[in-house]
Amino acid sequence: MIKYMVKGLPPVGRDDIKEVLQELGELVKKVCGGEIKAYILDKEVSWVEL
Image 1 (cartoon, helix red, strand yellow):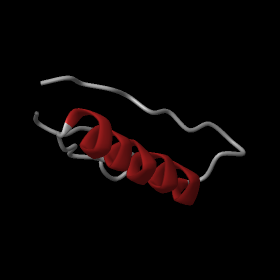
Image 2 (cartoon, rainbow, N blue to C red; image 1 turned 180 degrees about the vertical axis):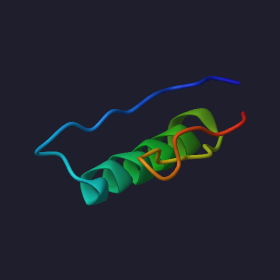
Image 3 (cartoon, one colour; image 1 turned 180 degrees about the horizontal axis):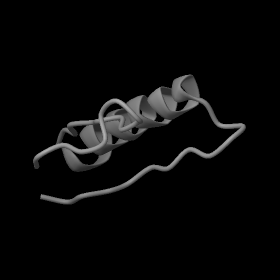
């Protein structure tokens, strides 16, 4: 398992982060044959169990 963090600071918005995560997932699948699980953390969701 590889953990990778993508941070978005203003003016980067939630939609930008989703787009980056989608592109990352496509590249991981294409190049490595793997898949990703993506989580977006914010004020309401501040952690996830991996």
